[in-house]
Image (cartoon, rainbow, N blue to C red; front, top):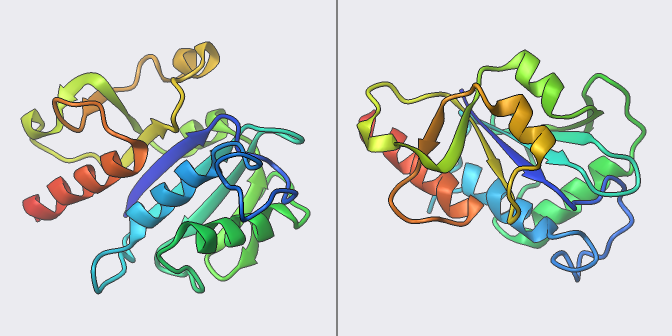
Length: 188
C-alpha cells in the first residue's frame, strides 16, 4: 500500500464552501482535489493500492484528516468537483478521534500531522531532497504540502524524516504524486 499525505493549510474543516469556487471559497481545496485524482486515476484503470490522506488546517475546526482508501472508495470520478463533493460530505458529519466513514471508502477524523506520524513512517517530498532515482528502495508513505511551504511547527515535526525529491524541477503537488507513482510503476 502506498500512502500520500497532502497538507492543506487553508482547506476548510467544515462543509460550508461552494463547489463552484474550490480555489477561492474553499481555501485552495482545488489543489487537494487534483492531488486525490492523481493518487488514484490512470487512463482506463483505478489504483486500488493507494491511500490518500488530506490534512485540513483551515477554519473553523482544525485539524481534520480525511482518508480515502483506493481499495474501498466508490463514487469518485476524475474531476475536481467530484472529489470536492465527497470531501464536503465527509466534513459535514460529526467525527471524533477515530476515523468515521462518510461514504464508501472515505473517512474523516479530528487530528493532524502528529497522529499520522505516530501511525506511519513517512518520507518528505522536498525539492532539496535526494533524487528519487538515486534511491534503491522506493518508500511507501509520502508527505507533501499544498501550494504553501511547510510551517515552522510542521518542519519541527518532520525535521528528522528522510527528504526525497521527485526530480530537478519544482512541481505542483498533484504532478509530484504522478511522478512518484510513475517511478514506482517503472520499478515494478
